[in-house]
Every structure is written in structure tokens, then in C-alpha cells.
Length: 270
Image (tube, rainbow, N blue to C red; front, side, top):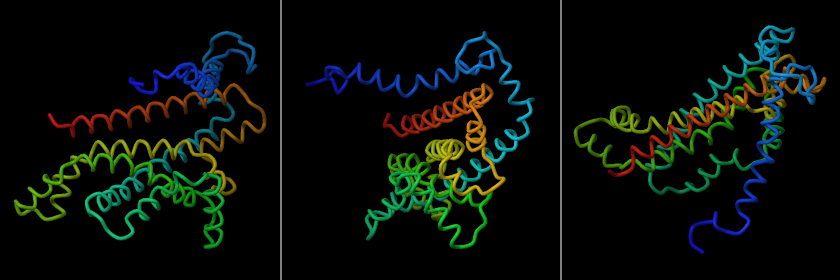
């Protein structure tokens, strides 16, 4: 059968059902974040009151501190993970075949394949074994670790599309390896690096399971602060925070996709 999987009977209906199951609850949360009523089920008219409550209400200082922790950890984790991912991608893609290459790639990809709860428990046990006190630093180390494969994949994909002849030409013109990398390869890698950084940032920002295991007492990120409030009952201001976090996630994923597409277009032969 030609035309791809979309032309199989029932594919459109199954796809629509799966999308509805995945995204309809998010739409409901977004709509009720603008509810004027204190009820989370009965519509009381359109209002911005819960968004104002997030910034000026009694829980505002707690959410502000949690958001600051989330943003700073995500920024640092994404930056370090992307730097490691660039080095790993250059080694994996440009080094040709070497013993243990498949095992190395499997090791880089491991955080993507291992269930997050297993990673969380293993990380907690590791930190306890070496005597590292749970807190900001443990969250940052854990986030750097599981963000590496998310940053690696766009960088490696971009690097695979760059002709090695560019670097060879630079070396022929007496550029050192460092100069060839800094002046030739790095600018060409920029779309993949940006895409990987954005993806790692939003993965870190949204993480809950691993963070909840390694954060320690008194340390909160935005997802754990939301979970703590939900345990006391779902309130409309939680819907407002969730909607803003969802909007930020959509924005960063879209920017990551656009950066990756820009890189693919630039690499395509004219």
C-alpha cells in the first residue's frame, strides 16, 4: 500500500483518539485556570484572578523561590550537559570506528531507556553512599546527568550532516585542531547546540520524579512545589501555574524544533 501509514484504515481515528487522551486534560486545565470561581469543576466566568494570585497571593513567595531554583538549575544543567554533549558528539561522530563505540553510545543513551524511577532511586543511593547532602547541588548533578542524552542527540544529528571536508580545508590552511573546531566546526554546529540546549533546559525545568528523590528537606523546585500544594487539595492557582509551565514548555520545544530545522536546511545541498 502506497502513501504511508496515514492511509491505513482506522489510522486517523486511532491517532485522533490518542491525541485527545493526551492533550484534552491539558486543555481543560488551561481553560479552568481562567475560571473566576474557586471551584475547579464549575465555570464561574472568565477571570485573571488566579494568575494574579500566583504572583501576589499568600503562596507567591514559595512559588517564586521554587521557580528561581528551577530556572537556575535548568540553566546550569543544560549548559554543562550541552558542553559534555558537544565533546561526546565530536568524539563519536568524527573519530571513526573504535573499540567500544557501540557500548559508549549505549552508555550515553542509557538515561533515555532506563525508567526514571529507577534512575531516581539509584541516584539517591549513590549520593547517600558518598555522603553528599541532598539539596541544590544533588539536584544539579542529577539533572546534568539525565540531560546529556537530550542535548547529545540534536548535536550529533547536526554534526553528522556537516562534511568533514570543511575541517580538512581549515587544517590544510595551517589551522590547528582547536582553531578548526572553534572557527569552522562550532559555528556550523550552532543550530544543533541551540536545539540541544533548549531541549535539555525544558527537560530539567519539568522534571519531578528524580528531583523529588534527591532534593532534600526544605528544597523545592516548581514541579515539587506544585505537587506539595496538590497534596493539600487542587486549587485554581495550581491550574494557573501549570498552564504557565505548559506554555513555557511548548515555547522551548518549538524553539528547539525550529533551531534543528534551520540546521537541517543549512546542511542540505543547494
